[in-house]
Length: 371
Image (cartoon, rainbow, N blue to C red):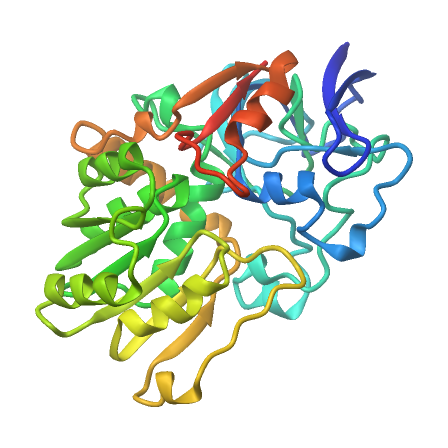
């Protein structure tokens, strides 16, 4: 059996589509026919070449792309009878996989934090030809290796809500966990893309008193309100920092935010977000997955027990509970509307161009490829 794979041969260059034989399953592996693959902001960083300087230059063979996504099980390796939560799995089931990489043997993995693994297997992005070849979701198939967690999707959860669950939803939940978001908190979210919308819904269901979302695209802000945002700020209209800060204070009863989530990857937003914090508040930094950025901060800005906390990826064991929450609340929260644009796999270059936000605004909330 053969399948198509999207290949990046050079940073910023058009993608190429190549065809390869699908390798046989080893014991413990699962083969999935990809139904949706999301275009995440980190994929855009990888495409531009600003995600990780260690990978320069791209190998001559090229890299396979994509980590978000979902699909249908078409073959189970020897010994696979359940997913990683113990739920029975069969051919034809919908599944989502852990989008990160972990050895499950290092100190951090042993502490239950595989998202912080210090010895992740393989290369990222995976190099074309590296086993199992179908290691990216921008492809017809995704090969779930025996060491990668995966979970069966609950019956009734809409297909349209699945392409970003194993990245945006998990990453947002991890960030809120790290900040101990709870009842009565005032939360500010910088960015109303997939991460920001997920964080909005999750903060509300954790009991946040207010959730204020900032973005410059009116359509995204309107969707944020449908996800539960109590307040929104259009930064293209409220363009003075002091006015945005005053608005946040008004929305939080002059207290300031207990939690700010920086989800965009713009360095100036870190210092701006610290300015929104109440004493004892926490800024959660998620957006900066690329190397070589810096910001300047007056230490006095955090002296009143304020903190800046990095949050990386998510623990895979969060996924079943998150999908169960989505199933229970999908009649209230329009999870299926996070995906705003859909493209065929063959149109991957048009999809990336539409999703690109560097130096410009885009109305794309999440674009997906559908093989």
